[in-house]
Length: 418
Image 1 (cartoon, rainbow, N blue to C red):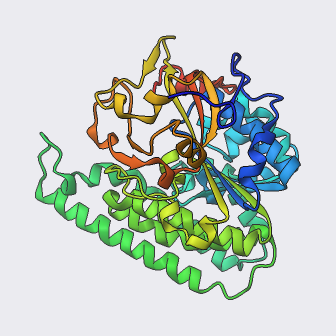
Image 2 (image 1 turned 180 degrees about the vertical axis):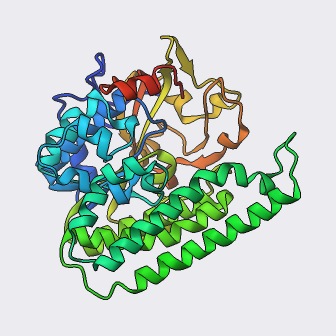
């Protein structure tokens, strides 16, 4: 394969501030007429990705008017924290807003400064607020908004808080109760375990019905952004129960409801606005990866009319820094059939439009996915057609761990590798 400066745009990522000050004007022809840009990543916790994407978000906002950023984060606490004009990492650590994997130095300007000019929200269905303790729930920006909104009556507020409390309890006991269904090796299941599991399912089904009843009681039409998002949150609560009851279908429900959330936010909350979606590659793909781990993506649930207005960008790498300073490589058995293998020969960091690169015979279209040398789970190794999954790729051969700023995040991730 030969290289073409007309097709590949090479990037300077010699330092960790990848993309800082970079002119992203090379993207302009590809995003002309687009109203949604998906920013994927093949792995979370990557310094260069956060650097590039934070600067790219700022460029797309200032030069193309993309002023809504939807992140792979629960919708129930993804919007309200950023209504604080003086938001800081310390506040985000207490009230939510983004997952700790993105609460890093590389995103500090985006989350603390640019967030005052653009709107940041979550898009995910699964709720951090039914997976946390009562203290964090009460400290959340969502809970504070709930106390002050006039969209719900006092009775509806009390009911929602009570149902959320029940949901937190059921989610907390789910791992121990589900052993009946999954028949874990070496774990004996007694009659009382079966009785407990049956009651657990009935309780979850009752909770789902109660959330649906509360949603049906919302007769007032929301007129402000926070209330429109709150209405969707309540609807999501009942829909998400399906994933809690049947964990094997969770990812399918998750991607379908993220697509539904995206459509709702675009049409009913932020009409006539341009949106950016920041999430894992597996979620933002425009069609289904043949992936036995998830069996879904947001793109497969979007109407063709909306996909035509979208541009799907993947961020990929070949090596990533581990906690001990060494590098994990994508050299699993199928790596030689992967896109990353081909890209390694072409440079250390660059961007390309997929269809353009294929038309110039610079890359193939049929590839096999690749994963880390330490992970031999063949569910990760699946064939796909690149042009059917992504429109463009940012590739960086070697990437590094991000820099966490909060003590609890540093402690959480200090020994964690992908």
